[in-house]
Length: 157
Image 1 (tube, rainbow, N blue to C red):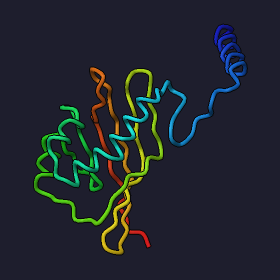
Image 2 (image 1 turned 120 degrees about the horizontal axis):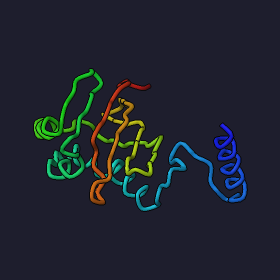
Image 3 (image 1 turned 90 degrees about the vertical axis):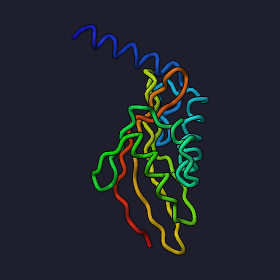
């Protein structure tokens, strides 16, 4: 217990001395997030992933998803990488526009990232939103999605 208290005190002292350290935000955590990783992950989630679904680009989606990828959709159904690739081949996007708003981006020192946020879909004058969380792992220097969960699909006025 004595060593625990001493360690906490030392960490507090170091944190106070740094002074310029940023506080965590909804966008990034204090877990050693390199600027490069943060930008890569944002680009992957906000640009590449939606592009793969919009353009039914199975080659791009194959690059994004790890071979061990699994997804739980809003209805509670499980899917894997093969299932997702088959799904986008058969299901063209019917919406007018889409964007993904990242609300949380955490990158852990072990090469794991968590991206959570809200998808915004516009179709004519109807806006639909959903919530999702994604887990990615950096393997051989490349971020691969290994899990996704979608929930809370609803139309907004």
